[in-house]
Amino acid sequence: MRHFAVVGSGPAGFYTAEALGKAYGEQARIDIIDRYPVPYGLIRFGVAPDHQSLKAVSKRYDKVAESPGVDFIGNVTVGRDVAVEELLELYDGVILAIGAPHDRKLGIPGEDLPGVVGSAEFVGWYNGHPDFADLNPPLDGTHAAVIGNGNVALDCARILSKTRAEFDGSDIVGHALEALDGAAIRTVTILGRRGPHQIAMTPKELGELGHLEAAAPLVEGADFPPLQADDALEPGQRKSINILREFAATAPDVSKPKRMIFDFFARPVAIEGDGKAERIIVERTELDESGAARGTGETYEVPASLVISAIGYSSPHIDGVPYDERGGKFRNEGGRIADRLYAVGWARRGPTGTIGTNRPDGYEVAELVAAEMPVGSSSDRRGAEGLKQLLEQRGVMATDYDDWRKIEETEAGRARPGSPREKFVRAEDWLAALGR
Ligand code: NAP
Image 1: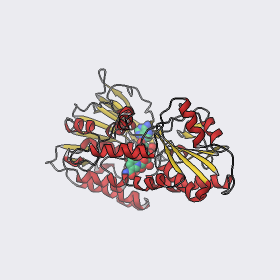
Image 2: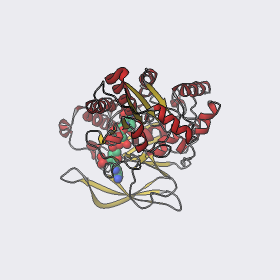
Image 3: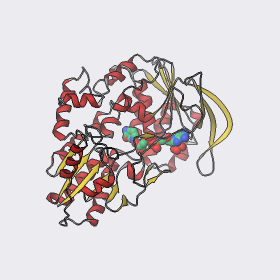
Image 4: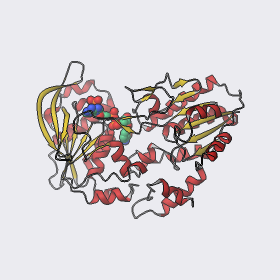
């Protein structure tokens, strides 16, 4: 028998557990540990609430959690309640699948002003992440800006621009829905430090902006290279650029009161305001020979009382685990950090790719584990039994998969009209739902 601890219950964690389960069958017990009493990580706290079809992948993860040999152990923070070294004593292999929940810093003056928030904070706020329930982003101004040209920037801009009715069927939390419904925002500027060809936005997500009830995208035709330059793009990117070109060619619908302005070749150099964010100072850029943004020296102001920086994420440090500061992830080779210690998903490769990218990633790391600890081999490590004993001694109230199902049922029972559920946003509420 082998015992494995997968730390983190997002896509990377579940795909790895699934792969380990397939590889070892009855020869292994797999514990999926999470700092929250509820599973799914990015699916619950990161994926946009109006993208329910993406969230449906958690049904597959349920099957993994329900399979024999796999357990969910929630409400346990590795690095605080239990150290990685302790897990390595108890388990044959420890796989860190903790994602990249921290915002990267802009590194410009004014980024700590009230009104400037990272996308992890903003996304966490509308998705019911307990750390950001009290964010209260300022929505009383008419101008907001999102920095970055990736899919997260699109998520943030879209959520800011939707009407209340457009959240029907979503699982956006009530506090965010109410606040957004009362927002005064009319203009959302999306700042990209490079040009249309360099966006990291996928066609489906970009296309949605063309069909919003009250907001219209605005793109400047002069920002594009000549049409024939699109031939060199890979097909997905070409599709995205086509959508942008269509936006540029279409006069914005004047019946829609909100605008989403794509401002390309625009690098924020400072955020200014009287005790809070009021404007971004932006430098016009051009592409240098290597394709990087080079400042032209020309600057201008973009008004914004809410600034969301959506420029990428990093994984948190964990005591004793080597870290790659530049990559914002654990130092690893092909998923291997050290003897019997591994990383998967964003903790392994940095915050890139879609949910599905984590599947081959998890299977690859499971293969590596199985190569180092062949199926049929065994050890006398104690796994969950030892972990539970340790947690009990430390007064840590761990939750299991049945607890999660009770929480889920309670959330579903509190659903407001038009929403599949009203999520709990505080750890105390989760535990209260369990009568603890
Ligand atoms: P991303 O795709 O890496 O985009 C980050 C953006 O920030 C890039 O446009 C980058 O520009 C810009 N940026 C970085 N540093 C900057 C700086 N200092 N100043 C100004 N701009 C800066 O990251 P993401 O949007 O956070 O997304 C993370 C991953 O999740 C991606 O793989 C994404 O596709 C995925 N995701 C998918 C979905 C979906 O499928 N629906 C939804 C959300 C996220 P440069 O290119 O110039 O560096």
